[in-house]
Image 1 (cartoon, one colour):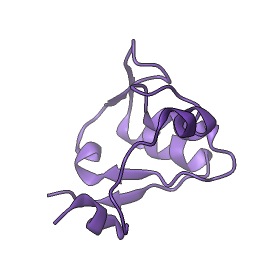
Image 2 (tube, rainbow, N blue to C red):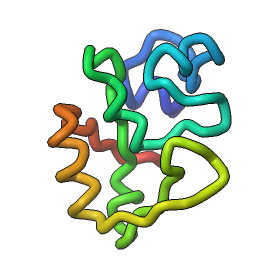
Image 3 (cartoon, rainbow, N blue to C red):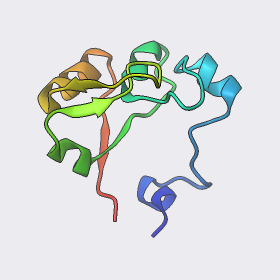
Image 4 (tube, rainbow, N blue to C red):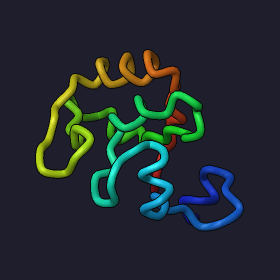
Length: 94
């Protein structure tokens, strides 16, 4: 099953083009990160998180740019997303 079907999307999924990424969540291509959700005050983005990611503790991600990595405790990631008013859509990927 294609990942788009798991999410109920009618078309293929992508991170978006440069213009879309720079508009919201205000990151450059190659720097898409879960932390960018804090830039989405209009709640345009749906945060999708694979359940397998939450098996890791800590969770590693880029800190809004791709030349470093930040580690956050698994539970801290969920708290962060909730504080940004973006309850993640948790999914299982094959």
